[in-house]
Amino acid sequence: MASRSVNKVILIGHLGRDAETRFTPAGAAKTTFSVATNRRWKDQQTGEWKEETDWHNVVLWRQENVANYLTKGVQVYVEGRLQTRNYEDKDGKKVYITEVVADNVILLGGRGAGADVGTGMSEPVSAPGGAQRTQRPSAPAADEDPFSATDDDIPF
Image (cartoon, rainbow, N blue to C red):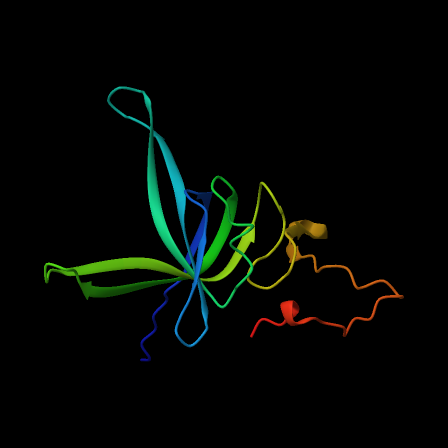
């Protein structure tokens, strides 16, 4: 029997702070931000509604221009995998960090709503029969050159 494993994370939440983009010595962009997710339930003993907030650290690689859109309070959809790494702090104590390494980030609300940070596609829409499909951006106008690009358009 073949062994299987799955490492998949899907989050929908709000950014707790503005995203920060830094570059590795090799020039790869690393964008980091935190996402808050909430859980609400009714306490069985008291009948009161309670709420709990979890914070998730997210890392998005090789997306240089997204920090302007990933601002505090914006609602996002994040899809990726969990990764745990460790390092020694200045006192020599081993510190473990678990973060979500994002494959796709889709802006759901706020400035730039509907843009897909990971792939440049717009927000998901419902297809006939309730199935989900993703609406792609429209093609350039007939008088535009679809192959023209400036240095700012090239992601590498």
